[in-house]
Image (cartoon, rainbow, N blue to C red):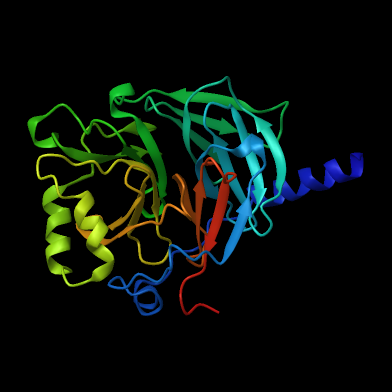
Length: 312
């Protein structure tokens, strides 16, 4: 037993010390992963991993730099779960805090950041060493009314991205929109102005340009109320190859891709039979995508893996 625990601890240390992968050359990334294409079949996962009951409500996912482990947080539980991305088996449970509404997790170097829906970020250092583990909270200008559920890592700009499921902000121009804010990792501070917002005008522009595509019929129906914008991001991730932002909304089961200019690149409504409640999203270094779903009436919590179409 001691040998097994030592092996797990050593493997986790190797995982945590993996160097940050070098940025992919933009030309090659465009050739391999065209920005105009969407190379995933969202309703036909290449790998399905049922979760144990203690992970019925995975609310956030992150990928280790080694591409070997997934990090997950469970809504209301102050425990960080280390999951084998190939098998879905839970390798470690790492307590980090009290009960709370935890919605996102990201690894940056050897540090782990965990997001609460109130906008508070918890920085966990020495996460794999219980006796030396420290947690430092960073309060932001965001609060409960913003219902911050999405956390992503923008490596190129050394910042965390926080997506608001609720209120975008107090100004008039932010009404009926959703916002993404940036937390500067050098200053350890949130920019009080969102880096981008999304609303009906951007969505309608995309839908008009792709009006002939049959797959958008239910998407058009979801966005048919001109005075309401019900898209409510529960997760956000930066694609490692094309640099776009991928967002999930459990409300409506909507999958959205936007660029950093706030333009909609792709929209799709997920099938409820597969995605009962999509909450977590992350990528491996080759563009493989993982989506976590909370448990439903007749399905356990799930993590799905989607291989890019055409990838070997």
